[in-house]
Image 1 (cartoon, rainbow, N blue to C red):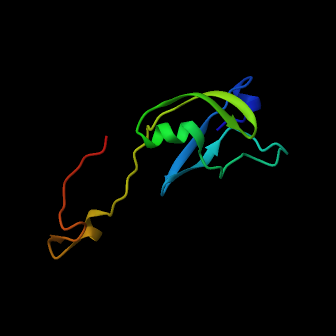
Image 2: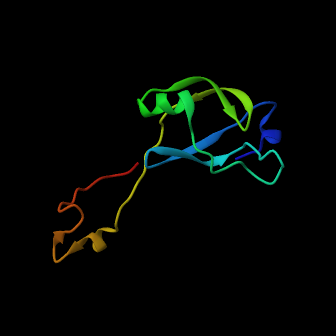
Image 3: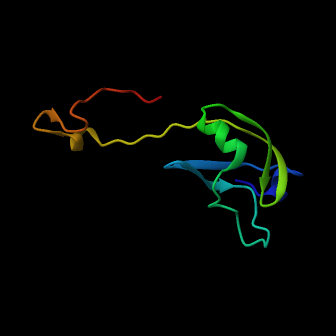
Length: 106
């Protein structure tokens, strides 16, 4: 991610990852106030969190390290967890959730 200085005046981007009931900032263009690096590790909160938890996009004002931003947030991710086929099958039977499905990722 580009830093705020590189991305243009006032522009910022952040990625959050769901961890239990929380969303943690794992990548961002927002710099720490002291310039020591990117401001990762913060937990999403407030009206944005309420909206995301309800499965709805959020559009409105948020505070990022005390600075107000006009923001939008939507759930746009998918994750993949899997085993190589030969590791998931033993003796011709499937041991991954007791069934094997052929799926093509494009």
